[in-house]
Image (cartoon, rainbow, N blue to C red; front, top):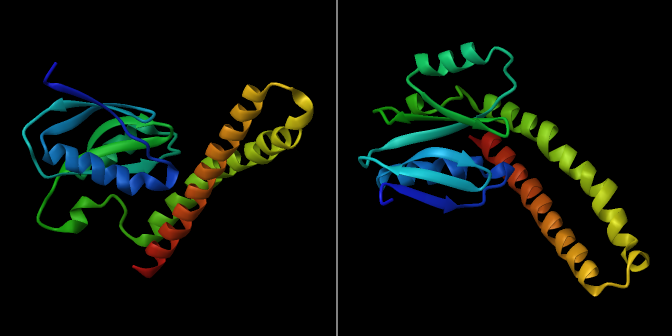
Length: 178
């Protein structure tokens, strides 16, 4: 079992660049990604190499052509998870070859797709389910355990949404400044 490593690691929606760096660092240490599940990574032992990992948020209807396009530019497709496609490629001399987007406008467009398809629905659920239930908590039950559970979930959900909003604001600013 020394040829496999399982890691639990939390990356939220705006953390995709951090996830890319993490996967690249692991590969450089001799661990390439084999399978990705939500917050759970399975690595297999490999020769340590400088490999760049990139994620793309997809909506492609013609998936075969989409993957082929990346393959034509030297990217190896790994898998999809939650509408993100994972790719890797050995690093080359120029940094431009290691980017899947040709300009910052494309990065901003991808970020907007993530916000509209993933963050806004989470925020709507927050407003329609979490907040009303928290406000009505005093009438629902006398159980202190239930109240603690709802308050804990409220804190976690609020923290995650706040992290996502702040993260996307920072990414937007970064992409506009480049």
